[in-house]
Length: 106
Image 1: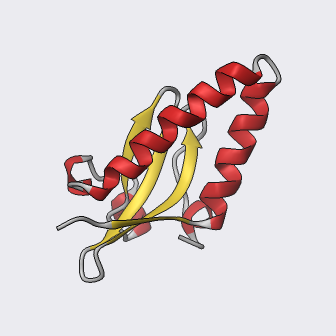
Image 2: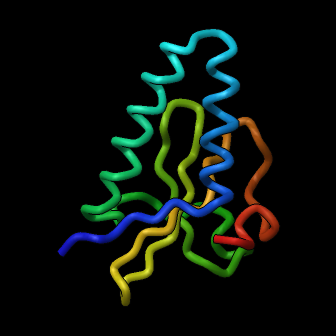
């Protein structure tokens, strides 16, 4: 059984910001990056639990997981009961650890 994938508003904003940043150097590269990102995000429909729980999960008190895409972490949580994967943030790997403020809307 597959999951539905939903991208939260904060994650959508993160994606838009990343595309804007990459586009400064190359619109073509940004389009290619985005296409690959979409492929990975929507692959979460199948077996989202294949990705590891984030190290911050204990502090956040939620088993967020992440998938790596180039220099970004796609942070998501799984709602097994409703078969939904919520993508809550796209987090650049160079940033500090996730905090509750980062995922409060996810």
